[in-house]
Length: 368
Image (cartoon, rainbow, N blue to C red; front, side, top):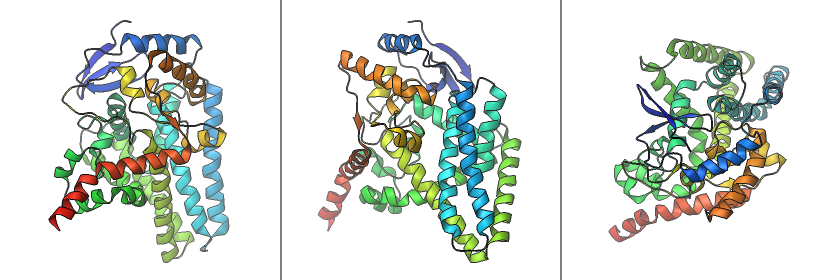
């Protein structure tokens, strides 16, 4: 396989993999994308699994917009009533379904027309969800480059929960309390995930170097003005506050639960440089959830986490077939491939969070 195309940007080295996604890598592995991955990629491309389907993209977008429209119609029809709380939950769930839209566009897995893709992403991220699309793309691409790497994966770096006991020393007293009980508190604190993303967006857009900063600020401010005007006009002040809290809680819990099983409890590593080649890096650190039509919809295709990480630019509809090819290929190579049921995935996450924080509880008992 030819060496990946490498170009320099202000943010560091970016590697253009043959999966269709440029990923920020910091410092490249000497093995690059690896010959072992090249063979699997060849099989995938032979079946056209990386080809985009514009009609499918529009159908998926139409479904998502219909879900949002249904929530808005219900909101204005119900009016001033505590029955708006189910609507708040619905709109929170729509926020995660919308996140799947900007997630796909960010990976170049939706729409051949870049302008339509960009419009879709900014509408769903900044305008509907109040999240900076530019921040998310940068953050998420770095995660894809080094999943479950203590020093290089920003998804690990921004969490209070620890994934390796050596992280405990960097936590504040309050964070250490959370870590000691993270098996339970990790899930309970997901209600705050929506607020955390909005806080990160404010910090990101306050920086003068943010990409399309004025556009993003304008969309977020417009969204905030429309949102607050609507809830405080239609509802009583108490109902409006409750609506906002419930919607954000529903979004945070759904968002967190959909992403939690992807990597937590899988192989973790550290160091200044990447030690795994592309195939191992993605397969050994990712966990699939056994698919069916409902799981596929609920997770937006992220239940095929192994395949999504191997082929980030692959359209969602092709991940099921890629799963078959990848499972077969990993079996040939003797590479562990993890796929579990819905409930088992969360049991494994909770068990991992409990076990990795066990030394902190032993230390507390010894001190007592």
